[in-house]
Every structure is written in structure tokens, then in C-alpha cells.
Image (cartoon, rainbow over all chains, first blue to last red; front, side):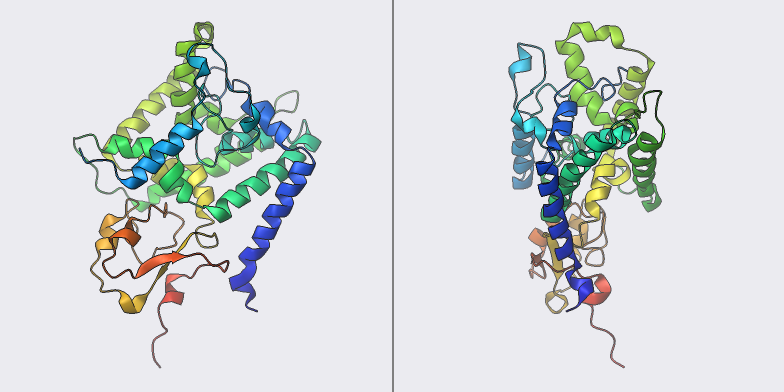
Length: 46
Length: 297
């Protein structure tokens, strides 16, 4: 098997594992806590 | 002005879909529902009153800025964000830029305005986005922190024109109480936004080509993601139509899977012999040298 040609498959596996781990650990709460409140920095107001 | 093409209609639908929370138009506030747990693949500010999802670039900076103060939470979030971003990259790559980014869509609309146009800018200017990614998105939020250990979102705060356009201006309009916070930084961001918008009228996808760190990150997936282009040398009549149709000024087919390609698929649609086509295998893409047969010895 040519590893150079097939290494993207490892990335797919890594992506699914990371996402599953993140979901298991409720990493989305961090995303929500920032995305659901007004970001004054993003608006150049702070 | 030319009519909108099918791709522009897809861009319009995605833009409307990502910004379809209309409640703030009569009751100030942001959407705080389930979708805010998920990052939108394109550049779309989560502080936009209409936005349904999170901005990946904003979350990435918040993640890095929180690593010192909240290492556990940041690590958990990094897993979730990393997995999501890798999946977006592998599934879509820069197809997001070509078909689904609201700011990319706006730039294409702006370029349709009549007036003088810049045909080409020097290629080395495209390295500016590498500097923006390294310094404003990655290094400064991670390395520079305040007394409590929190860093700042440098790219969003000092540079991002999307935040000014989608969040600052509408929120200031809808929430007069915020106007007391307007200061020098806000005026700087408005100035920068105006410069960028004017340059987008003059030069097609100015922001994507020269400044966008998100596009740069997705570009790394162009050779390994699911959406890759292939070129069949034996069918090619070298008419050059593909190169003329490329909005990113790439040399096609040499740069068919280049990091700069936004996967608009213009080259694929205009090719008279269908020598450019989509390859959706899970193997990594070929470079131009691999496409071309080695010279006979």
C-alpha cells in the first residue's frame, strides 16, 4: 500500500475521533458560550 | 450587469440560510438556540443579529485565547472544533469559499459593479494572509494574555471586516445603547472595511486572494479532501479557456489542486473536452508532475 497516497484516510479517522471526543466531552458548550453572546471585540467596540 | 449564475444562487441560498434569524429586527438580541453549538464553515460573524451559527475563525481565536486561563475547557473545545474543522476541510475544502461563504458572495456581487477593474495583482501579495493567520489568528491570541490569563481575539478585534459589516453596523443600528462604546477602534475597523469593499469592487475576490486566513486553512485540504479536480492530459486540446475562466488567476491545469483554488468549478464547466473532472476518491490528489507522464528516456 502506498502510504503517501492513502494517508488522507488517517485524517478522516482522526477527524471523526476528535469530533466524537469533543462531543463526549461537551466541547460544544465552549462554542455556544462564545457564539451566543454579543462579541464586542468582533465589532470593534472593546 | 451580468445575471446571477447557478453558483451565485447557491451562494445566495447559503448566505440566507446562515443568516435567517429575523427576530432581532423587532426585538434586539442574538439567536441563542441549538445551532449556535455548531461552527458555520464559511466566514460569517456570530455576533450578526441574523446569524444562526458560530464563526470558525472567531472560535479558533477564543480557543487559543482561553488556553492559559481555562486549559481543560479549551482542550475539550479544541477536540470538538478540531474534529468539525477537519471534517469541513476533508468534505468540502475550499468549496466553502467558492459556493458557501457569505463574504465571498458579497465580493462577487461587488465586482459586478461597473467601473475600472484591476486585472492582476502581484502574486507575492497573497502571502499577506499567511502573516495574518500566523500572527493575528494563531500567535497573538495564544501568547499575549491579560492579568486573568485570557488572550484577545486579535484578528476579529483589529482586522475582520466581516465583524464590522455583519455585527457592528447592524447591532449599532438595532441597539442604540451600544453607541456609547464607539471609539477609535471602531472607526479604524470601519475605515478598513471601506478600503476592503472598494478593493473588492476593483479586483475580483480581493479579500479571498490577499487576506482571508480561513481560505488559507481550507486550502491545505485541496489536495487531500473529497472534492479534488483531475486533469486528463490525453483529452486536453490546450485551448486555455479553463485558465481564462479562473477567478483566482491560477495556471490551469498546473495549479488545478493549488491551495488558492476556491473550487468554483468554472474550469470544469467551460472545458470543451471534459478533460477536467471531479475525483472523489479517498486518496491524496496528484500534483501536476504526477499528472504528466515522465519523459521517455
